Length: 167
Ligand code: RP5
Figure 1 (tube, helix red, strand yellow):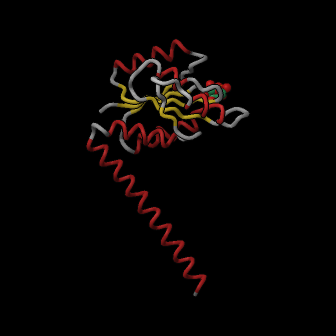
Figure 2: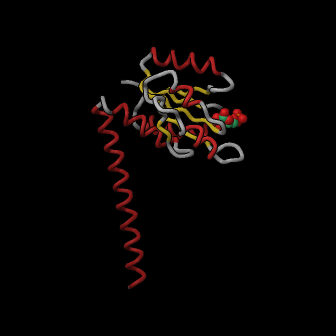
Figure 3: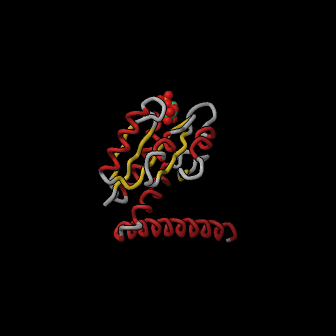
């Protein structure tokens, strides 16, 4: 099975990006995690991307804050899907990172999730890999069913509360 590279610009991004790793672990999707920066370690970032591609990496997930260029820098070097996670660091609370990550020039896309949306980045990466993996598609379907049952339970609880009010 193909695997996911999770990259982040700083260790300070890890508390957020751990959400992506947790989702992939729960879905039994292989992943690696690296701290590597578009600005502070541009050569090491390029070398890692080349190495990951030589080992059949299927999706890159890149989290960065402030002037966030990591996802774009990675996307420039591969035609594999790149998912960007804007991190809420710095005085602008992630709005800077959101715009830096999402506003890519035509031809070099970055699929940008919400500010701090590392869990959804994990789900999206898994869904991309699941296009060629029926077993993983099944696990994603099971996860949706768990969500559905959770909402049904919440609805039943609210209805019970309302019925108590009117009784
Ligand atoms: C970005 O700058 C990193 O992705 C991080 O979100 C932010 C701050 O980095 P540190 O100063 O905490 O290392 O490059």
